[in-house]
Length: 312
Image 1 (cartoon, helix red, strand yellow):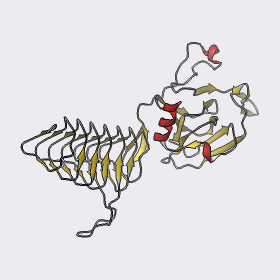
Image 2 (cartoon, helix red, strand yellow; image 1 turned 45 degrees about the horizontal axis):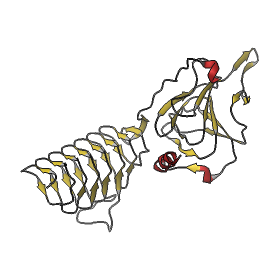
Image 3 (tube, helix red, strand yellow; image 1 turned 180 degrees about the vertical axis):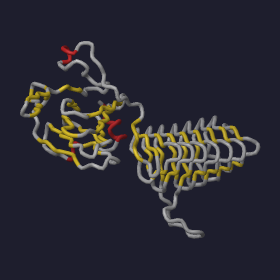
Image 4 (cartoon, helix red, strand yellow; image 1 turned 60 degrees about the vertical axis):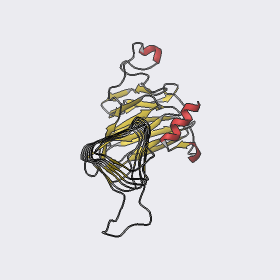
């Protein structure tokens, strides 16, 4: 055997990769497939129709039921619970169990519950004790019951500073984002006794000639918008009332930008993944687009976005 089996473990499967370790009182059924360099801790049960990738850690007291797939580099904390039957009844079995997938690099916290048919996205993090009732987007951090998005992994809320604001053609304290091609601009605010005005025009603050605009408002603060990239479209975002948070991601770097003033504009170029969330109840988000609506220009799957980015 190329893997380690504790003398008190029961391992019936022969599909286990090299350098995997199965510890005391774990039970692996014959149909399970487990990759290389995994760590299966004490009192773990793994059923037949289960696929586990490489370098997966499953801590003590976890049961992995039929139709659950854990991709490479997944971490599952102690006593986390997976459910594969949406309507469980004693001695009654569905024709097919709902498939649950935890994507590469994701982490499931201790005592979390993952309902049947859920996809936990790449590099996502499920907090301890969370109850996940719907799909978790890539890189999202979810907590609570039901689980809601609290933030995004490896992102920062601090706007970058620039040593040479004039070179970047941006106001001091704002500049090129950590994310490739994204710009954070300070827009003018002009006040007098009649009220307050802000503006942007092509060649001055606005980096493209817009052909379309849309407004996002009346968003439940728990909801997430965006979650896509564009192949060729440029966007310019200003939260003209209230506040929301914008997450931008080029596949390597990720940054979170708080939009809470008409004085902040963000230019998102093509091939940047964009997400908006944490909307205040009065938030109104203005989005200018460089082209008319074209469904074919959208990339809505994060893994596809990463693959296209690698090809470029």
